[in-house]
Image (tube, rainbow, N blue to C red; front, side, top):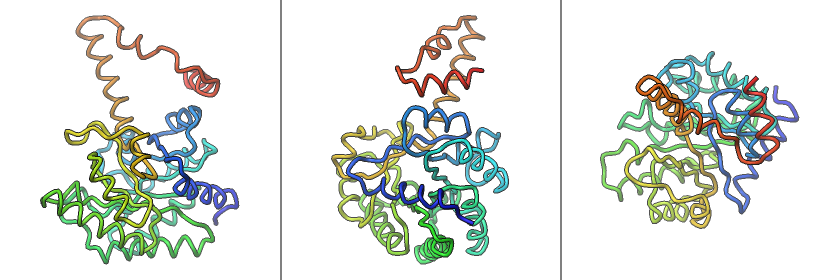
Length: 289
């Protein structure tokens, strides 16, 4: 059963993809990170599957059980007021029926959007286009049957897994993106790309809002700034697992300094107050209790 509040949040979240202002998503992995992101003024929460898995001691790529993932998602949706969209990887199922069963359970947590990808464990062989379109169409039909608009962010991993030339990867991403849109996706997520010309071409050639991953850890390129991405026509930008990785990297740096030098400089530097925001300060105080 989808509540009226969930339906309203879904409509708001969908509108964010159609606004002139780019939608910026910092991907969270637990209740604390989600509440802090909300307190910092971000208008929606997006989860990172890798981050949630890592927080529970698992590697990425659907090793975590659906039950554990749902428990983590439920905690987040119950803790924040803004719309929540979640990364469900390839859908947590070996066939269409299992995927729909999984998505039904995930929707019941109160989320309003999903990411679903066309690769399995980043295997070079992507899911066949027609099969993936069937998955999108079935999820859209499920959403319609529940009387609300689930925002589907369909991710193609053509750039990630293909061994073809950059032009071939771009061509496949455009073809798949348009097919996924026709199947019922609201937004097309293409990653990892960072060249302005490539991003501009994706925006022009795919008849849908485009999501770009801003992740300094991918390849050797640097993703354009938020203002540059907006000028290129990108509708949505997300950080993926990089925020969680940065948090873990900070822990490692603090631990190394403490064991090697016995000093606290990195820790002290990281404990400097957040920018002057009453909401952020309140959240930080709550987390420190």
